[in-house]
Length: 135
Length: 113
Image 1 (cartoon, rainbow over the protein chains, first blue to last red):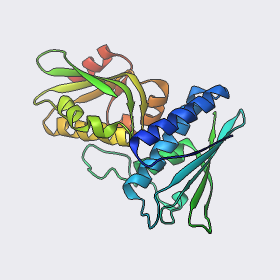
Image 2: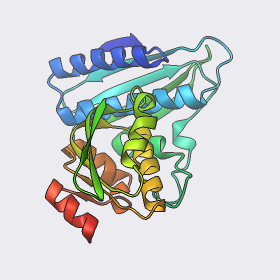
Image 3: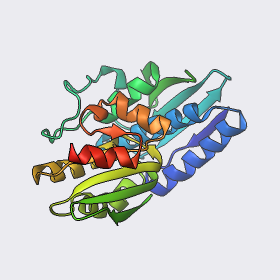
């Protein structure tokens, strides 16, 4: 199991991604799983950086468990309550005629991982559980 | 993330993308990459063979650059995507908006189609 803080700035995120990559590679996770986990992290943290509302410290942390068939990923952050399961996918796929390309990130997350749960913890943290399979 | 611009002829450029195009890198290449892809009056093929990682912010950048080209009457074709990059493009149905082919020859041929 790997637990780590995720700094909400580019250099810190890249360093965290490198640690996660090394952890999964050592455990024998496939390139496909490692790509999907990197993607979930990138999309969720970018979402926090761009849209997260923070009343207190801007904090995020991750816990990963690799069981040979997939990765259980728990992400926690101190932003305002946000359940990623509650957002709708864009009504239509991207288009060259349409400047509205919002919602791509979460839509991609839902296609690459199963969102197994969301809780708002009493201490003011969002907690989201993902499962990233090797299939 | 880095990219290289190669002139293929009087009407087309090739832009070679290498590395990861994600939330960490997109801000560094957004302006120069858009300028390279959208060079006035030219079509563009984007070489994705060296692109190791693509996230939604990268997709947004590719769409934005391609939009400038098409509004000027040009075409953009992608080629050589690695399997997971191809899967991401396909998952977002981007391959229906921007043609994605296997080789540079196919991409250049597609520009003339």
